[in-house]
Image (cartoon, rainbow, N blue to C red; front, top):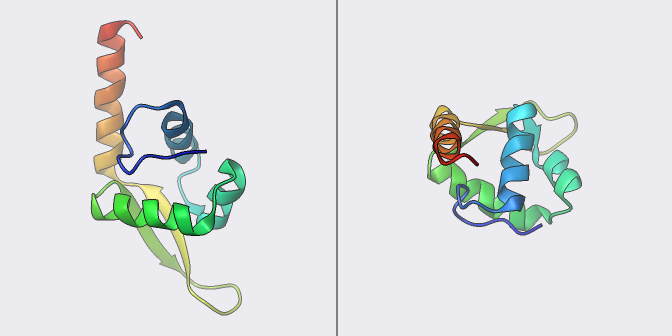
Length: 94
């Protein structure tokens, strides 16, 4: 899978990724890596960028054993952007 730095760049991969995020609101990076066959470092870089852009929420959760664990979800800003895209595609008949 190839993801763009711009999460809203309309590509088939990004749409699959966003759809998965909408239907699975709290995800661990390991879940995403398995689902999309993507490397942890590459995905982590994208998630950090999208968090800086305000599209991803990163929440620390208590670890099961050792190290830090985070869950990721779409922010309200991202959900609003998706609504705008949906409305635009509906207007265009897509």
